Image 1 (cartoon, helix red, strand yellow):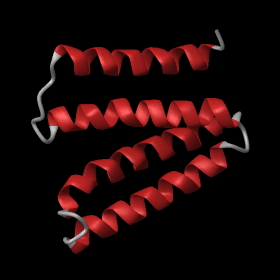
Image 2: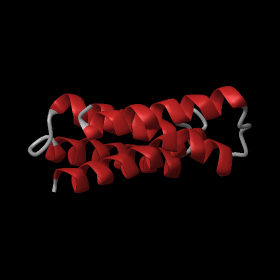
Image 3: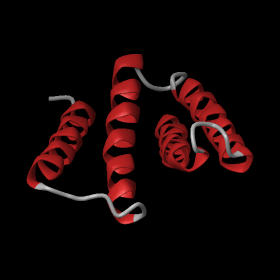
Image 4: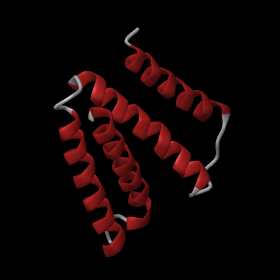
Length: 104
């Protein structure tokens, strides 16, 4: 159950982070409301995941997966460039998450 809550937290955080670009510095109401709701869900789901998972592991997975997925959303949705440095950074983040989950 902890990983389900963590997955929900990650999806909500990625959605909220992705919507930040659309807020225009929090000047556009609808995207701003989306960001607030998404982050509320993200932190609530993360807090529920902590009933089952260690804090360090849960937070590292949440932050790492959120960072990698948000970068991918930037490339796919916002047509941001994907160079070798960004690709390597995303792979390193994913590798770190895998290492944490595997317990090595």
